[in-house]
Length: 344
Image 1 (cartoon, rainbow, N blue to C red):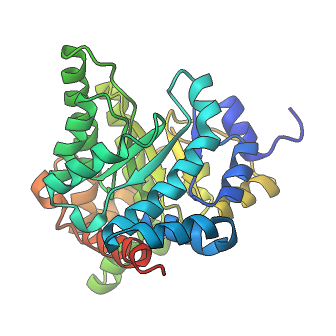
Image 2 (tube, rainbow, N blue to C red):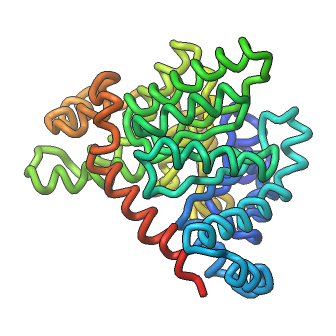
């Protein structure tokens, strides 16, 4: 099939799906033309979508500002605006795939990552926005409870702010428990994504390595997230989880190409989409190629890598206090949710 771009090959010839890591309508359209089957949003991406092309949202933004009684409801209204617009564009895929694909994520307020009641209420409200909206909840102890509750109600759900093998397994287990409850109650289980923020764990471990003067190279650190992703994938297959791994927060096309062929989903930023479309890249399934054991050995000299890589490296109660979890929740709050609250 001469002339195929890498993304077209990935979509047509492997088990790997890919999503657009952007809520901007023009970027979603480009992605759909090249094989994307879903869309990732989070509070910063929603703020970017509105800020990047304010003219297309102008009248609706004005209405939201006039009618929202408080900053929190205003931020939520902007999430609704961007998410429901994307959901419409994905709806044909949703129906054609018998509700297995064509989803867009809607993330709850990241500042409420430990507040069960707030997340429960928000998740139920978001689930009314449309049938192809996946409620995005953090992989914290509190968030896992709500993931299970959503799964028990047959609500599509996505576990996010996750960087480690233990978090990914916990999301899959919460979905499994919830799905079993759904079946017992006569409900149809809905799809679940378990997000691995692959570049963010690399960034975090790079800072840890520098501070601790660890004996690891830049090349070693660039494989840390991949090592976590590949171990997670093998465990998901071994345990037969129905939750689907969604790899996000990439730091280069290598995060996509090194996982190509796996039965998982890649959330790809527009910058890397264009690189994968425009450049000649070898079309090879590489997901089964293991990370060099010597690389794993050097990375394992860092306690934080071991905590992220070993299935029992963190307990659910430790998820919220893991360094990169706190950093990401803070960034999503400050550069996303609060940005949306302050639009005027």
